[in-house]
Amino acid sequence: MTDPSQSKTVAVIGGGLAGLAAGCALADAGLRVTVFERRPYVGGRASSYEHPGTGEVVDNCQHVLLGCCTNLVQFYERLGVTGKIRWFDELVFMEPGGKSSKIKSSFLPAPFHSMPSFLMASVLSLRDKLAIARAFAVMARGPLPDDSPENFQAWLLRHGQTQRAIEHFWKVVLVSALNEDLHRISVRYAFQVFRESFLKSAAAGRMGIPSVPLSDLYSSAIEYIRARGGDVLLRASVTAVNQRQQRVAITTSAGEQEFDFAVLAAPFQNAAALLPVDALAEPLKQELSHFESSSITGIHLWFDREITPLPHAVLLDRTIQWMFQKSKFLETAKRDDPGSYMELVVSASKLLVQKSREEILELAQRELAEFFPIVKEAKLVKAAVIKEVYATYSILPGLDQYRPEAKTPWSNIFLAGDWTASGWPATMEGAIRSGYLAAEALTTVAGMPQKFLVANLPSTGLMKLLLR
Ligand SMILES: Cc1cc2nc3c(=O)[nH]c(=O)nc-3n(C[C@H](O)[C@H](O)[C@H](O)COP(=O)(O)OP(=O)(O)OC[C@H]3O[C@@H](n4cnc5c(N)ncnc54)[C@H](O)[C@@H]3O)c2cc1C
Image 1 (cartoon, rainbow, N blue to C red):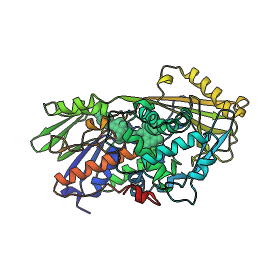
Image 2 (cartoon, helix red, strand yellow):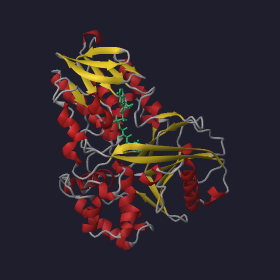
Image 3 (cartoon, rainbow, N blue to C red):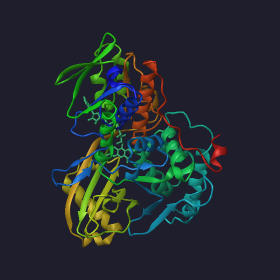
Image 4 (cartoon, protein in one colour):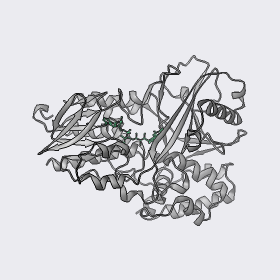
């Protein structure tokens, strides 16, 4: 390992996943890293904290990953926390009234690995299934389409999708994967979701759920960076990033510190305001003016009894979209506790943002009882509603042209964050990729080029031929 006192220094602004990924990679490359995070914990939009109303440690929202998130999985390996992820191979789709269908993989080669369960699924008619199969046949071939102005709702209608196929399949998957309504989703990214998670291989579509609170999962990065001669400063809000000759000056309430390089890994809403106040910042500000945010609402319910043996389920035809029974996979859950802890997730939750906590809780319990009637008899012990109004940016058709690269016009300042040009939408995988891309760009400029990004999962079965 390089002697840290001899190393080039890097300031990383933002201890979300993008900043942590850049920080860990650069610390590994022998640079002396200081991460500035304004909150008292790391993880950014993927974090947990003690909820004041309930006294419980809650995630700001349930976060899931898929097998195709190769850089995120490698980041967990780097931190030594892969054992904290529980993997699930089957998804349960439920209708009000309790009718359900399971989608899981079989021995068949990709892209047909989920076909037997798909054919059995009662939530779709044969006509819906044939329409979906026709659309998959178009999606599974050749390179990804360019990010055109067409939206995915229009594409689905142009490709003869039935209303039920849209409601019970396309919408269910994409609204939760991309946190937007179908008419506000880019065709390119909709294709990417289905290719990477549904079509390429069975392994790519497995769903991973952390078994510890999110900030516990990601705080291992603090020790990782410190063990390599760097530091992570919490409650350290950066107010300005400026060039000083060949160096970068970082301003916080504690004063100004100089570094050889800086990686700005704040969300798009505050990134532009932190950059040097000069003409070079104007084009970036223009690009960022095209970004829009979409909300996610998490409804946390603690019942006095078990509501269902299922660890998670997709809930169809209602406002609530997913149920995660967290007491089934959290390591901290007491096994002898007869109660249960559930989180209901509503993505693209514009309609809930205006509602009060009481209205949301009433709606959530009423709808949950349509899937699990025992909810009517169960006692709700405590509850929390967490509205993340600016949860993710919307992957609008054509947005790619405005997503900046890691390299900026300032030779020693780099950008990271799920909003930069990572080739992925606003996800944990997108954030990690952006951090690795920033670290690659920085080590190149520093004259010590390194590769951090890892490859996508390979296609298997017939997909090897179709995507060649
Ligand atoms: C409710 C919700 C549910 C989600 N569900 C999923 C999911 O299931 N799966 C998935 O893959 N993704 C999910 N996401 C998206 C995922 O969380 C984000 O894409 C990812 O965490 C973004 O990471 P980031 O590092 O780019 O940004 P952020 O997490 O926003 O990190 C930026 C950091 O910069 C800090 N900061 C800002 N300004 C300053 C400053 N001036 N000085 C110092 N620090 C500063 C912030 O405090 C923050 O910690 C979800 C997001 C939300 C909000």
